[in-house]
Each structure stands twice: as C-alpha cells, then as structure tokens.
Image 1: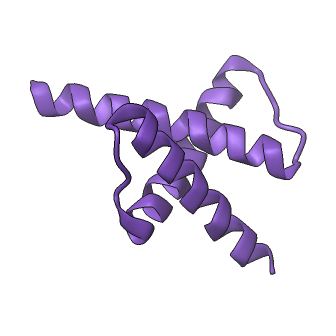
Image 2: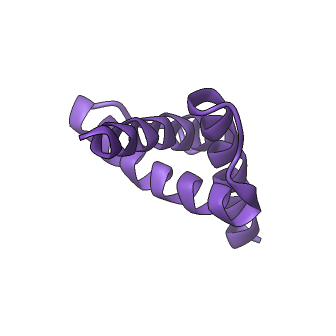
Length: 81
C-alpha cells in the first residue's frame, strides 16, 4: 500500500508542478516520473536548508511539489542555454 501512496503523491505533485510551470500536465506516467524525481530533489533541497518534513501525506506532497517545480525550472534553464 505504501507504493500506491508513493505513486499517487508523485502523480499529483507532477501534475501540479506541470500546471504551475507550463500550463499543462505531462500525462500520467510523465507526471509520476516528475513527481518522484521532484520528491528526491525536494528532499535534498530541504535537507540542505535544514528543513525536515513531518512524514505526513501533506508534507510529502509539498516536498515533492517544491522539488518538481525546482526540477522543471532547472530543465527550463538548461533548455534555453
């Protein structure tokens, strides 16, 4: 069941980040990948800043969303260069 929550959080975070950054999502699989990678990036960024999530569903979603937005922003910068 934990895996299902992980994928759902990834899908929602990726979808939200896609809508926030580009105005449209990337499909279910693309949203999951972006959200999962965003969770990794968000956890890393939060760790650097000394912020720890509380382990709740909302905390995981916020961490993944912020990481996905940072990821999409970085990819956008690299694409322009």
